[in-house]
Image (cartoon, one colour):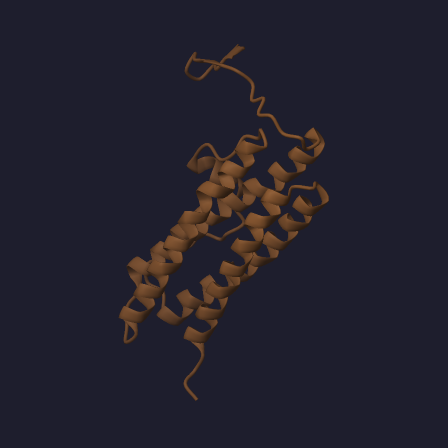
Length: 172
């Protein structure tokens, strides 16, 4: 047992039982934690655009982004808990998210609605790529539970990308 210097609280090392090789657990944790950070960052970005949406299609876009942000935030806990189930440490702070995230922040509140949707579409495409890469790591590590979660999240990410794409198409 050791004492945490920040708050002088005793803590035990994590020793969660798993049949996965410790080296594989380390690889999976290293692959999943950036996804947790990205999901949080993409949730914030989607909510930002949801809150700052305007224009002729306000209601439809506002609702779509609300639905998408809800979907994003519900994926965070199961993925972070997957890391913990394997005995790993997961996201601990907003600063930790910032250090791990691949999602590009946008603090601008005055963005054209179509540009918001195109930006989110690109972020979701990047998320799909990162989910596939993490899925490969889970497969190689024989982490079927992690791979299964990522398959569901990949399907949802592709659906968000598709909706954002269709919402940005010009009328024929």
